[in-house]
Length: 259
Image (tube, one colour):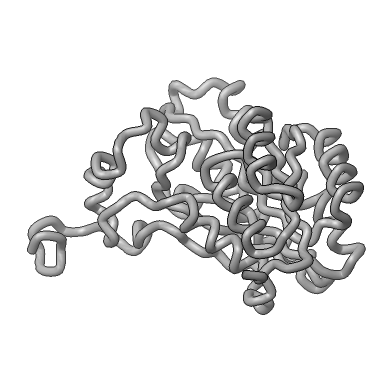
């Protein structure tokens, strides 16, 4: 497969979960991938597994200096980046009243500020080339309310706005910026107790597809946006959520599961 042949891609949070699946898929599709993550053991192991077309760089998305180092290492090893997937993120389950200012700022700093810094600095390299694709990973919680997820949801709504502004400012310079909005995905963050898939699925009976998503299913959306197949998409929002945002079932009414 060669849908990304010749492209250099940076994937933040690329060592595991959705980022790991994206790193693997991108290499399979011909890209040279820089796995940017704070998880050194997992990141180096994945890069070794994927071979010469993958490089691990320790990276803190919330630190501007770390972005410059990441770009320098990318250019030195593979050349100018043509794809950026802003995937790194953290999740915090806490009510607004229970959320401290430090908690809120940490989540915003990683999820939103981290994406902003990537859009700014990697985006500048793409603008200089006159081409590129930026994929910002938001969430279904960036498109609806979410009790107990005040900081997280705020950051993901922010990514949605950031994406639209960047699409307007970068699109006419040859750089496409789009967002992906995963629903429940079976990752270490979304399933911290590593429950069996069958057990997790029982909590997703409100979703039309009746199951939790797999990391590779999000990666495939990022692949499409990174590839030339999505050449006329800019500012688009793709929900990979099993239909979660479609609506809420009226239990027992015609058309609901089991009826």
